[in-house]
Amino acid sequence: MQETINATQSLVTLDVALPGIIWGGIITINMWAKSIGTGVIIVGAYLLFRHKKEQMPNYRWLIPLIAFIALNVFLLFTLIDLHQPYRMINIFLHPHFTSAITVGAWIASLFTLLVSVMLIIGLASGFPDVLRHNGVAKKLRGSESLYDKLSPIVLFLAFPVTLYTAIIMAESSARELWQAPTELTQMFLAALIAGAATLLLFSAKWSDAVKKDITLVLIFAVTFSFLIYMGEYFFSFKSSEAEATLAYIHLGGTYSIQFWVAMILGYILPFFLGILSIKENTKSVAKVAAVSALIGLYLAKDVWLKIPQLLPLS
Amino acid sequence: MKLGFLVDLHLCMGCKGCEVACKVENEVPLSSWRLRVKYLDRGVFPDTSRSFTPLRCNHCENAPCERICPVSALHYLDNGIVNIDNERCIGCAGCMMACPYGAIYMDPETNTADKCTYCAHRVEGGLLPACVVACPVEANIFGDIEDDTSHISQYIMAHKGNVQVRKPEKHTNPKHYYVGGGTSSLDPLAHERIEGYGLFNNITHLKTNGDPHHGIIDRFLAPFKSHEKDNKSFMQSDKTEKGGH
Image (cartoon, rainbow over all chains, first blue to last red; front, side):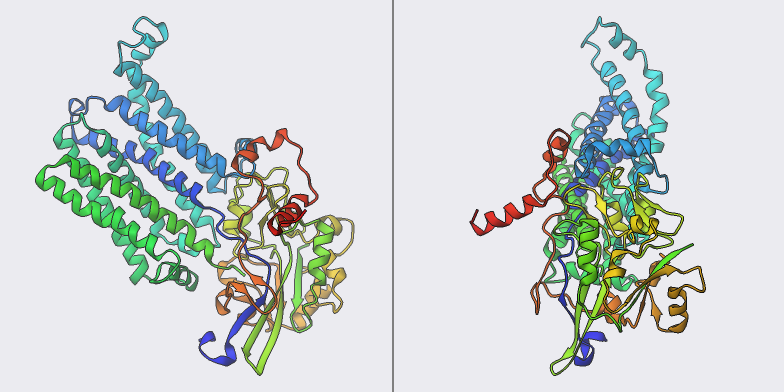
């Protein structure tokens, strides 16, 4: 109403420069890598529940290895985004537990530590010829029971590590788009997409039945995630601030092209390619779906992270 | 005691005296502002009017910045001021994401978050905030809002029904009030902000937050290097861009 008639037209004619995008690409990589790190653990546990170990011969070191690499990328990008990286230690020395950043950092650190222990045991057992006569390696090879005890704890921790970023976003009162209740679900689905897609790329030695199951997880996750995006975009009740934010992905908006490329690459294409790969039993198509989903997921996360920061707050 | 702030927008004439006083008192670096005065033009020529809105930290009772700060660098003082300890700040910018008023900035010299503290250092010594002292028309009123006899409480009572806060729907309980503000002054969605040169200046966004000459690697090397604190880097950059020395 305000801008529709001349008498109420209102225009800023003098102001200082406002901050642009504060959390940018570094945070996108942080979230994307974390989704892979936790996703492989969650999807891996589901596969272990459904299939025999023999169908996934290198499971015990492959899953912790992927998770370890992805989690270290996530932690590295968390660190380099800080303007005072050495003061990261203050999160442990002066913790403020109302902050999801603090709680997340503590849980993610513990999670990464446990994944590292599982990786060391998994590698020692998976490659028995390496350091065959080394005392430490022998001891690690005999620690299979520790690996089995850590597995459920790591699986349990994978959920809060996946979800805490959604709580940081919920605490970001200035960005109403992130405060949508769907954010928590989207974060979980992102982990399923990233986990399933990554496992599709590295599961060459696993049985066809397992690969089919991973593809089904990918299809399920991209379908629901896409439906939530569309629901939020077209149909849901939105605050005026969230509505104004979504204007950046409307036709002609700054991030319109990136958003729709993300939807096609990350969700629509993997859905159809996934179905095709199951129907025709073609593994290469499933791998294309996986790569497409990982690229699309990154682009979608990037758009959703940046657009609320474009809105002037004052 | 709960300290609060009130700006009577009927009185404010946009002289920016408060903005300058704040900059000087708190040595706020170039490209950063703890307090700024926004000009807003309404209507269409010849039926136009101009209003001025000073904007600063709202010192919320339920401050999202305090809640999200992972190391308690942002904290409440007993007098209600939301203070910041930039020796503890890790520069995660969580507070900048949480503050609905855009009142927090990344100091380009210290690479830590900073904001208006109602001049807590002056208040502690019994002085008024610098912006209050500088205002030529006494549009800035500062005092204890829990004391019914204080000037600010009396002012709020005298103007009840016309006292507003910014974004009340955020439930932050700001302790910064406006008299004579309209929706277009206080709600950023109710006015247009067109990028590029406007009537007075270039309405734009900062290219970087924090030190523009301090990349990711520099942040890690910073403790091992001396760091000048005199805005020289900005001035050199400005000269270089213009091709002169």
